[in-house]
Image (cartoon, rainbow, N blue to C red; front, side, top):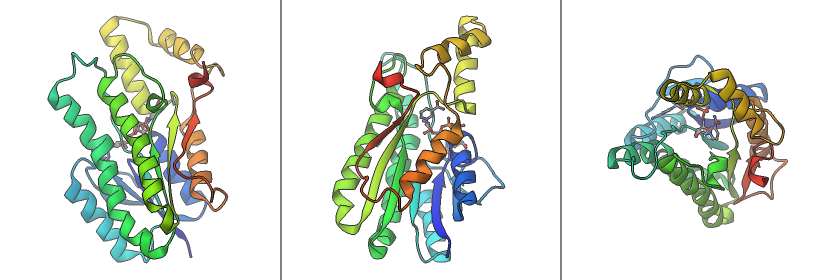
Length: 242
Ligand code: NAD
């Protein structure tokens, strides 16, 4: 029988690569996203709305006898220092990046407890480990996800449920391109040059690819990682060691 994996934000970038990798490895994959996708079993769901998340996961539970893996990936980035962060902006980022992950985790836990097994993976960021300027709300939200992984790991280890966070560095996805385009539009900088400078910041002198993060998630979710829980898994080309 196929294992069941729920991915949030699986219609683009890292989430899309995760959906593809898990399907290729014989998982049945459910994708909860606001943006339609033909890959996996798509469920329209705004992760910032707790009721929608609960309904989507209840729908999956009614169709499947188990949920083996939750990958909480949906997230948004907003550039702003603390002074330029309004209450609305803080709420917007937290509603998707943190509350969405909280709601999805809560919704899968009862089934995972009954099964006495499960793996929960949060796609956090290298910004859960180090600061980054002009990224106040996002940084806070990613630190919160690291904490969610650790706390959930401790509370649910007795049910054989593992929880970990993956902390990617800069990965070439639509989110990355949107951020660079915005920066270039505002500053008049040249995109090719900015892209090269971004790559040069990484010790491996390139950006990461979504498929590389997906392979990490596949490993963490699998029976090959039974003793890994509560951990922050860095995949950043060496950026945070500098
Ligand atoms: P992306 O913008 O390419 O994809 C994000 C996906 O999330 C999209 O499919 C989008 O529709 C979905 N989404 C957004 N808001 C949603 C909502 N309210 N409800 C449901 N789905 C929603 O971004 P990405 O770069 O693939 O980022 C994925 C995750 O990885 C994010 O949590 C991001 O913070 C994290 N991350 C990205 C990078 C990077 O450099 N790209 C680095 C570290 C961490």
